[in-house]
Length: 340
Image 1 (tube, helix red, strand yellow):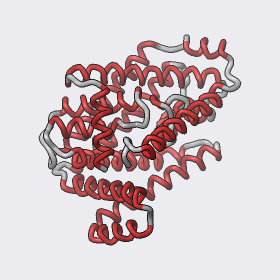
Image 2 (image 1 turned 120 degrees about the horizontal axis):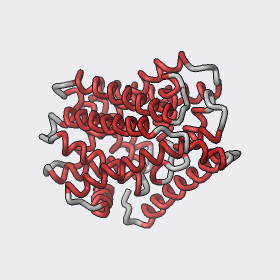
Image 3 (image 1 turned 90 degrees about the vertical axis):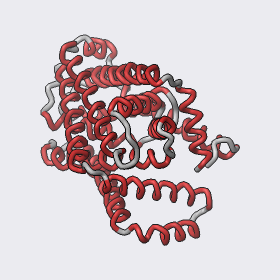
């Protein structure tokens, strides 16, 4: 789809309006019945030392993701851990401050440009990262769900999302195992669907397949998987530190459940920065252990703000180090869409 066409502009604007609308509704639901006196009191309970420890652990997570991306990119391009870290943080910064979640496309385009590589080839490695993240979250769900109290609606919701994620992984395995059927699939999609929709779907399937082939050819599959699992375990540990900083003493699986809710719910369209959607998911996930909605909202606002400030700080530093501007990333994204 071409962003420069009238139809493309309408589609882009529609996605942005939908995301902002969903964020506004969910933020209202999260704030409803909150006593702002209690909310402010909850913010005052925070332990700065535990918050700082959580931030350091969060930065360590980004370093682990950078190490993982370097290993995945190994067969495709020679790149340093610092470069991977910088482009990952720039991608998160784009998702945080700009609409339409162009961060993954932006970082792939930037790295490809810096290495004289096709952006689509680099983007295949990002597809691999997302597959690994889904696998790690599925493992986490398998560990956490049996330990949860029977807050049935929440459990059903997470089980449903996990089922969808498992189906996506199954499709990935089938594509990897039976690559010879891809040309047949392309012809079938081309005949059954409108041209524009067929092109978008085929690009996604082909990128998915290319990414899977790349990870299969990686010389370090065990290290890649270990980094994925280790990074997500560190995300849970960081969340537990934040919760304890606000004297919300959830069990370990409670922190893991919050991580699951937030990350599996990230597919929901939202405004830049995941505003509203994040707060609603966190407030909902904590309800099983924290009766006070004031305290839940205090934690959600503070944790979200800390995450945003961390991304802005690290992403802004990466932009300066790479001598880049956000506007240049938007231009690369538009060129990527025009080539699609």
